[in-house]
Length: 296
Image 1 (tube, rainbow, N blue to C red):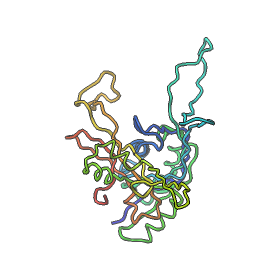
Image 2: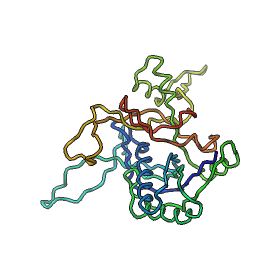
Image 3: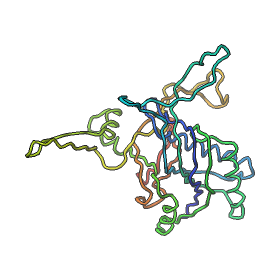
Image 4: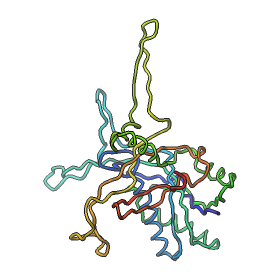
């Protein structure tokens, strides 16, 4: 089986939304990335590529600059906010803190429904829509490199190696829900399970000469982080006044947060390991971005 991939390398995004859930800050939520890719597909569908379908998305981070500041003697970091224009009376308007991050990311998008003869025009339209009309994770697209189309045949290591080289250096975000599940099987609730893996534990001991030696450790190896991967409904399906889409039932929801890992692309054996898909479990009210269960 051959997988056809669109790689959009080194997209520089300014002022992306860093508040990925009500209690996590840093890299944008996976819903933001898959939502941007879905929006791009819809623009291309209306631009003459009616059969085009983006089926999965991988995100590789090359650089992330969280807009925070820590002054001399400060214990915690503070958000660097924007300065809004003063009102007519000279007073500053009401201020709502918004966390922002500048990013350099590459997107790996699995797609179907495109003829080879249309590929050159397709790549040109991808650049056009990204540069002129789109936001990404709430941020402005500053610049990007020329997109390319790659193909990976299942089990063909040379294809995977070639694609991995195009994504280096960087870190692909992958799901580590397995860590959460293991911790919860041991009796921890969801939040405690998450904290179990992101907490850094410091310890000290004295050597034979009385010198204090400090050491740090984490429960699991790897760059483990909390990530927002979707939403869970907290109300029944219904309708709401002035809802955006009058034809789609409305539901209040809360963020779903689990564990993820930033992983160097050279450590993956197949591009499938970094791809994320939409998944909906209407019976339990879950609307998620998750990775291929066959690879979990």
